Image (cartoon, rainbow, N blue to C red; front, side):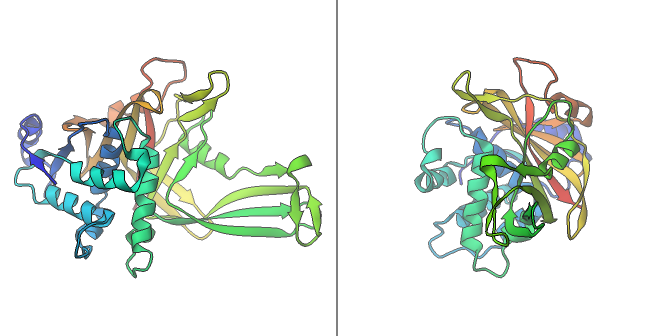
Length: 326
């Protein structure tokens, strides 16, 4: 991974002085070809300490030619950087990723959530036979889909693993109420009737999604883009969704309290154009990573990225939230 010297971020070290995060390196990433979508995810994952430590301890393959190998090389480039701030190129990693997934092959803006899901799934596939599976230990929880026949009241259940929660957005809702909506019962009637094995026929039913277990790092995806039939394309949903820096979630088997550590922000009006920025909390201070530029961010400005309760051209909105379990 190529390292370039940069003085533009030096002011942070000078400004913070002894308050600079102890033992941390603040690194920006170059953006030569609209790769802000990957930059923000790689920055979020590096400053997720459990994931970073696990990657740095990962035993590389001989040829160092898979995603985990290249992630380790990138993380080593950051952690071994001689200065406290700097800029690094992710060109080697992105060239490899483009050979693995054609969606990311090109110079066009892509979706950071789609990149996150591909990245996590690719890592999980590489680790699936390992005893210490980082993805399962850190990001994975289990959800239950239950369907109850309203004739015989038999409940069928399907278990699935998840590495993020994707939430529909509703006007005048907070993050907590959006989470509650996720578990709202859905009525299956008419043409959507459910085939009940017990009744051996299609019956009216109710369906619900429940969280069974919770991950150590909870990633929440706010569905900011939807297809609009009027325009025949995806449009941005800038609905205001307030969120707190602490989140308590009760699942079927456990309850966890989380602290907000990273926010991925989307600027612009569409999914295939715009810009992504990563804001992450390091040792009690918020830092704003805008590709190769790093600056300070304050709690008082968080409400600016909730979205808007009225139409706006700026449309600067939180898109993904990373919460760490206490």
